[in-house]
Length: 217
Image (cartoon, rainbow, N blue to C red; front, side, top):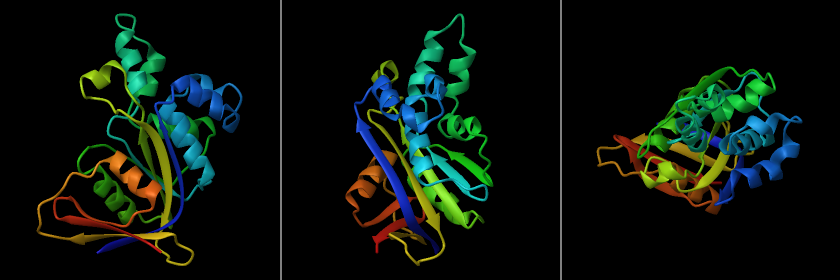
């Protein structure tokens, strides 16, 4: 069995909020002028991480199925004069890099992860296997436009960050991963966010051979 304790969390479910609205709302959280080139997901994940005060010795696990959908749309729309800026911000780990590189903030380990049906369980497993005393599990999505019509983008915009560690003292909740022979169920990132927002307990076969449990303390 693998086990992790949740010590702090920051959740932002902004629904249909536009990138411009998110930028205006969060611009004071970042250095002057920095938000001009930041994506909506980068703003949300950056603000969530900032609330948990990343430390140099932390490990960061980042989970997103679609990542920078808007930047990818813009990059594809920019052809034949492809935009190098949009290419840079469209890569999968961009949401975390926009904040940490901009602030020249080091971290001990960084594991970007993607997927759909089993992403949550795989990300928590990665966090549980990290050797750092504190792991920041973050992630999110941004609502696409024309990519959404092709079902290759999220229909919701949200971001989150969790501070996880091995000690129970002061913890808000406990995650555990146990073995099972039962058939797995899909458990997506938006469903995970809904569980965290509602502070619901969870016991779900969230990946092949893996039951994911969440108990609030």
